[in-house]
Image (cartoon, rainbow, N blue to C red; front, side, top):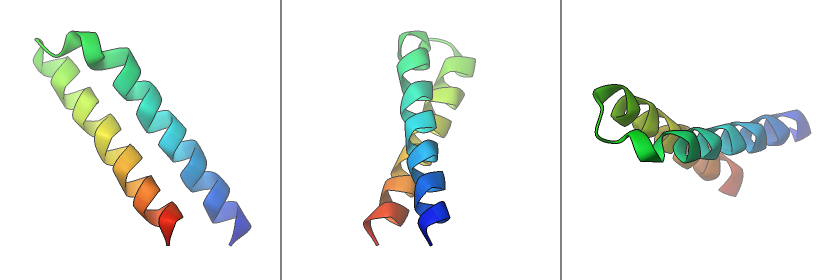
Length: 51
């Protein structure tokens, strides 16, 4: 159980990092897709951590 929480915390940090790197590239389709992936990673890991 403890390892899963660490994995979700790392996934949350990875998602927020992706958001930070691609927030300036929202005028390009590549940036929009990676920004959306970052949001999905972060939100899903926050939901898993809050259980």
